[in-house]
Length: 231
Image (cartoon, rainbow, N blue to C red):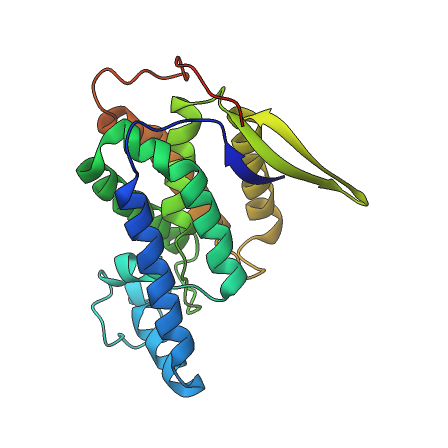
């Protein structure tokens, strides 16, 4: 299931969400402007390397303090589809979460979820020298917050099963619940292989579920007790 749009209106323009999307796009454009050797050095410097973070084995420290890479890795992407997927989820679900928190809290929440997601991945792969990049940990935190705030919001979803392709509306709880189960099963099956940081997705989602209690504005209810306009 690929979400395309939700039915959840916002009270004000999601400027922070747009800024985060813009930053990710600008960094990616800068990456693509670099030569092959330079881009490897750039990504290697600002990505999160678990073994470097925990000083495990013989991995040498990078040019950037290891703790800083918990943040910088959130703005790097491995390819165009990696970027598009993360930004699509950020746009669909981030605007409402920003609305529920306010702009300053949303900035802190996004970065904190990203850091906690990165730490989850690093702890489960402490000996790994493979760089981890991407906004998906922070975006996963937004999904965790959204599912508690607006579980009944209708999400227009592209559903595919073999040759069967159809767009359907389903509750956010179903879409994001399916997403979380998919991440969890892949984490168990892949066991660190496959090039996807499944534990970062899981860690970010759980961080969002927990932190939304502290970050949402007073008076914003859980459970989506508000009216929704049609798609």
